[in-house]
Image (cartoon, rainbow over all chains, first blue to last red; front, side):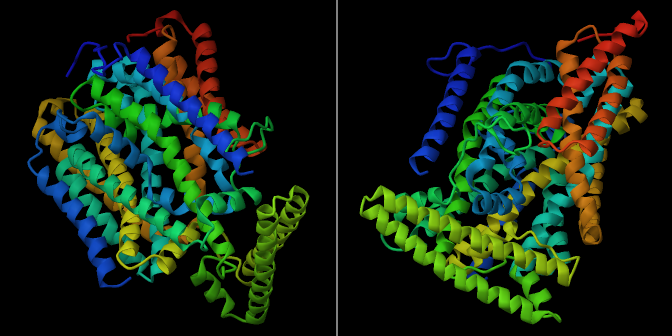
Length: 43
Length: 568
């Protein structure tokens, strides 16, 4: 079952996977910042 | 558990297993049996990847971890999103382009037979032994708290998972995991709502969080550079990155979940779904444990949460010692409640100086109760050296049984069993596949084209590993230290296995002999370092991986040129 590289994401607004990866990376950074703020808010 | 709980538990577990087996009973193509349905979408792949990682111990231990140590454990998962991005960009396209059934098959194509055998062998050794622990660890806790017979719990859950995994292979595993994750999410949300409802009137989410924060339970991110601290931002990012890369990228139980599916896109989206889901999910489970901690600040709390073990040892000759400890703990618990009330009053009065003083007194009271709990564990060990003194795994299940309404208890026990079945099914599926593709087909190369025979062999191997796991779990009670050793071995194998794969992907001029011996030397180095250093085990993933790649490069430089057989 061999297939060529398929680089279309099929996601609206994201033409390449690089954009999807950057979105996930951005969300991760926001989550870490959110966790740090959560800790500080209730410390 | 009453009749309603049993109906919920058996209805969900047997129902899902039966549905999975029935729906995939005609699976007779090798591709479908080993990789799952070719029409599987990203959502099913994503849930299957999540269900494989989330074992029953996740839902028993992690709330206990939150209860005891707070939110810091969440940092363990900080490397996961980064690892999944790398796997999507590098690992997955190669696996799909080559059309492999196992990750180790790729090592054979890129290097040689002995390197493939090394990768597959390390996986079978580690996962084969761990498969018994996956059944035993939750069974010992559930049987102890719920009063079930341990052997019947192990055999019942083991046979259930064997039936549908052998029948439908990877297709059945993915299908059942989707529904099992539904049960898990429903159960955990139910537990969270019940905990919030059981808190004292007027405390609410904010009040509970402030109290937990005052007692140091909400420190989610630790920027410390001290390598001896187990969970920090840095150990989570770097050690966690290599651990996740190895687990998701090279462990067949995970690789098998996403190499099938309708297209490369579906696999990538399934992994990205996990990259977004995992940290919030672990945070939520830890927070649940923290709120159970807050709940027990206002309720009579046991001195030791494995009550069956406590009662067993306390019924012996030193009963008076244990009763004295219980009374001391109860007295300190009352004192702590007074300190909590004083701290809440100071906060309500907006008096910062009084609040700081009250908080200092509250922390001292908390330390005093922790000291008595430590004394209780010491007394348990003194009375019976074989007594199990770690009780954090029992905190959440004890809370469930004592505090949740009937029906919800059945649902939460179903969460634990569903998680056990989901991760177990992936393990058996992967062990059966690796045994068939990387071992049996190497010994019987002429049989490789007989599809129905391959499927039959894969079913036999899956059943064998399932029965092996049940057998191991039944006798694991005699070898508790062995279980601990297996868990440690697992954590220190991963780095070197990842090193094999990263060498294959990125060091194109390194050949099979160099990487094989590089991996052997690197694994020896990791064993030596583990025996001599006391650093967080997450770092061994990075060390093992780096050592394997460096040794492979050095050996390649000194080996004859005809070993440079990079074929990828």
